[in-house]
Image 1: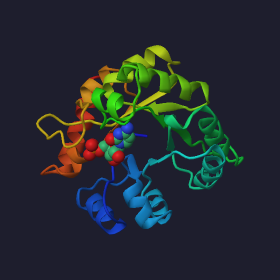
Image 2: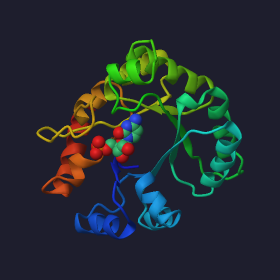
Image 3: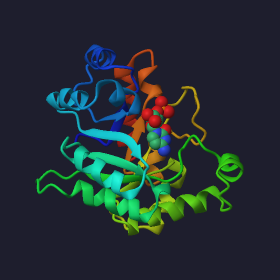
Image 4: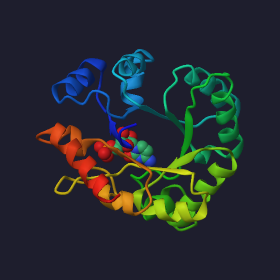
Length: 235
Ligand code: C5P
């Protein structure tokens, strides 16, 4: 992989996705495919992206009973993407079974499993009042990260602001992947806990996910380049 900066392909279909990638010459960069695109195009979109050698994070955030997640992961393993994920709120048994499903095939390809701790669109108030979690947001994130690690996950999706806390609480090899990234001078949209690529790296993120800061930029190619530059300058 050239860099660990995943572009979130939050487009409605393959036509608009492909048009965006080819217009701005972003072939081969790491990409994140989420529910919107996957539910429209299915596994075909993964095959198309692999033809262009994109490293792929398939962000479907599975959250169901352990057996269903196990069986679904067996199917996802066949796609041979680089990263898939589950919600850590599904509990340790579900995470363990997700990993078993991924390892079911005896292929040399490794798909990493990461777990969402708390969505980065949530803040302290939402977590207390709506989810009824009594811990501080930061403590809940740490709790879910450790639960995921103990259950066999390879890392977590977390806010940039919690990446360093997770790095301190878990093994150094436990990956931290952070969305909620904004390039300087772009809007916050619906993300509540945001940061720049440089801050993300400094604060312990191993990889970042960027969507609208690039897709809605006047010049997406330049915006992606800027993200890489900001990330690399922190090396
Ligand atoms: O446009 P923006 O940069 O906010 O996009 C962030 C991407 O990361 C979206 O595709 C969103 O679904 C995803 N994501 C997130 N928070 C998580 C997990 C994934 O924002 N905890």
